[in-house]
Image (cartoon, rainbow, N blue to C red):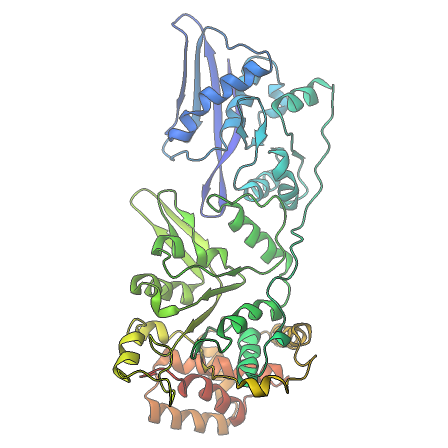
Length: 501
């Protein structure tokens, strides 16, 4: 007799169904084997299953036990195969009802004492189970995340014995309650920043249109503070966005178990020593990278030129496609990566290029060498380049409390987003849409022609400037660009502090 239950494998953030079959056959020497292209972690589950069943007082029969994971041409990786393999074995031993569990999807890792430990990908598994009208069996710590996958049945036991008692009628498991991440706002408030009014205005525009920003200035001028507070002025995520973000973070290597629905927009701040695989995604198991963990949020790269040239240039494709495509010899995965890039840097290695008193003797050669780590194609994808000047300490005392607090700025950004939605303006508009916006204003079109002649704009820069101008207009509730909107957008992109920009 062959017992069967379902589990999953992951392709990107999507769960793909995998069948688990167990056969107990006599007439040969006792054996216990797993087939179907399992990795080392899956192969080791035999000992975890044997010990967990021994804890329950169940001894394996002295027969040939064969476990098959189908389809056999997909590499089975991860620790979530323990529970489905154990359940299929218990079904083959007539301890659990096969007619009930044969169509269920199960994920979970077993401890030697029979406890069911949390695993990655609970929400993706729940969405698959709900779409196929199947029961999902997952660890108790993943139940608060899994129930957000739909109206399907979810069982979330904390121990293998609890699941056996549930089907024996001794103790009924209830559907777990959905949990929401309750972390407070750790980004600070916009009002914490004294001065820098031009930068605050530009970041409001950047939030309104989800534009990429580069902050350039000497040390201690508030670049990092400005970047961190960008996340505090972005509107809350929609239900669909929350599901996508939770699915990605649930698949994260190491700390991937969320256990709840994520509602706060991500803010990722990787160290400049990060590898290309950690930034974009990949590695041995093809896990998502920082740009995917920043999906629907902010990716902040502080000390931008200190990142490796390869890592920075690897962002170029994702900035255009809003996806991270990870292709290796043995797998291909596509992860969402619709993030807003905020970069910060000093103008040169010493940090004081252009300063009348503190500039080093190597200027301007030191600034050119330092900025050469940023390629032209990468800078071409930056919408707004801001000079962040020093704020004199004497002016800090004149700062007025309560000015431009994050909730107030967030309302303006939300208004711009709603304005775009009301007028069916795409968040990532095609060139034809931007052409139509510009040609509706003869004055703006004439100004743009002058800018093209003066700065020899590339096609990408041309359209990115129009996008910024459109965001400025949306903040004012205007559907037609004016020359003032375009002039401000040109200032943010073409009057930047970088050499050669």
